[in-house]
Amino acid sequence: MKLQQLLSYTRKAIDDYQMIQAGDKIAVGISGGKDSLSMLYALKSLQRFYPKPFELAAVMVSLGYETFHFQAIERLCESLNVPFYIVHTDIAKIIFEDRQEPSPCSLCAKMRKGALNTKVKELGFHKVAYGHHKDDIIETMLLSLLYEGRFYSFSPVTYLDRMDLTVIRPMMYVPEADVIGFSNRYQLPIEKNPCPQDGITRREYAKQLLRQLNLENPGVKNRMFTAILNGNIPGWPQKTTQHEESGK
Image 1 (cartoon, rainbow, N blue to C red):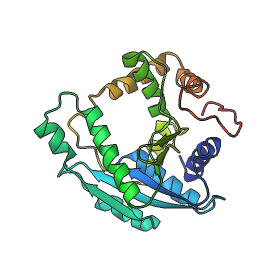
Image 2 (image 1 turned 180 degrees about the vertical axis):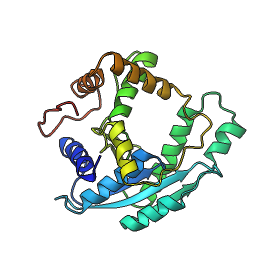
Image 3 (image 1 turned 90 degrees about the vertical axis):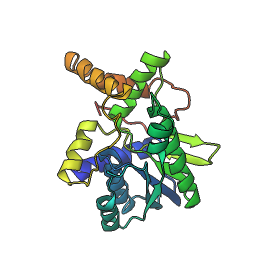
């Protein structure tokens, strides 16, 4: 996927759900993976011509793994002229050594987001961009159906009233396959997730299930996504522009 197509996807999401207003200060949550780095690239490119001017910064939360290196990501931010901040934590030690959590993902995500959001507020930013893509949204819906018995997925825009912070998800229309293509084409400095739980989570199960369902029922992934967009899920904002999804 070329940059022009990525920009088309992200601008559509931003316009559909009014994710960006003039004067916004947006922090991009960087994990080191393909999704957040592609989003950083897209938002920086969009910043150059978007009619509503906004500021950007990149914020990464280090979980404390010695094998995780962030220097290449820092150089990418320098080349894009985006300020880069890293938050050092002991989250990995707390979860795997101190608490020895048997199901660590939920607590890890909560602690990581807490550290990220705290830093974002400290920097004086009031919006944070998460790199969730189209497949993430569908997988979250599947997880919710399977394990919670409800039809739900995270919203394109979420206001966190306790933090006075707004979360936006500009990558919501981008299929994961296209994110992979973009990150390979532009040689983004992806850093492998060192978490010992990587690849054996419930989310990975949902990812494989979705892949199988789509193989056996071509187009089911897009139909699921359309059902989510039209599902009147509590907390989801209404679209402000009328576009046909056309399989995106």
